[in-house]
Amino acid sequence: MNRIVILGHTGFIGNALRQHLERSDREVLGFSSRALDLRRADALQPLEAALDPDAVVIFASAITREKGDTPKTLQDNIAMAANLGVLAESRPPARLVCLSSDAVYPMQDHPVNEDTPVAPGGTFYAIAKYTAECVLRKSAEAKGIPLLVLRPTAVFGPGDTHNSYGPNAFLRAILRDRVVRVFGRGEERRDHLYIGDLVRGVEHLIDAGAEGTFNLATGVSRSFAQVVDEIRRVVPLEFEVSYQPRRAPITHREFDVARFVRHAPGFQFTDFGRALRETFEGFQTPAGTS
Image: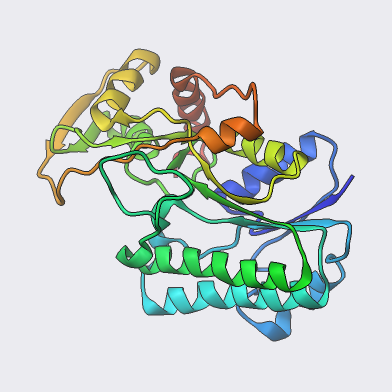
């Protein structure tokens, strides 16, 4: 059984991956930004000993948009990927897994699949994510390292650290002041991916030996208004909906998940209502309501 090395194991996705993989009796080694500053090439010594032909390296490290979407964060995110690429070429692991983002795609009227041309120019974060993919792909090709690139859509669930617009922000707002704030009438449709499904999907693709690029999404898009309606059905609290002036034009995001389905036959996504309820219960803890 391969050892799993998670870079960024204290973040929302990284931490959920660590917990899930440890529960399946795997050997998991995590590195946080405090223990290993991937931005500095001279600080990688702790990672060198962990990289060997038995290691599966999951690159989940990133400075997220909530911490600033600037040229400096772009520079730091690219440096992390470049330094990992250099080290992987000198000490090739069994495989590399790059946690990217659906932010690399444009908003469009028809479903996104893995062959959809990328257009990451909208944010520095998206540019950094796509650049990381390219850097690790070149290093992997140079040494024949199997590479799995994963582009998850908007993720929600217990342990969230971003509080992004959608289920995470709505549920926290209900706990805080019993008011959900929705832009316009909540018409925009998005595919919302539960963190528990994301980590199971990642594990499945790793175990299946999958390579190449995969979108991680459910294939079902809901409007934000529908999300609010479902929250009202499963959350045992009364709340108001406050409709806010729209800040941007209405856009939608839908996914064709046929590639994932082919590699994960029989995979069952968590019922959306149940996922919302579990997220709400997780946010009721002191750590979840911060």
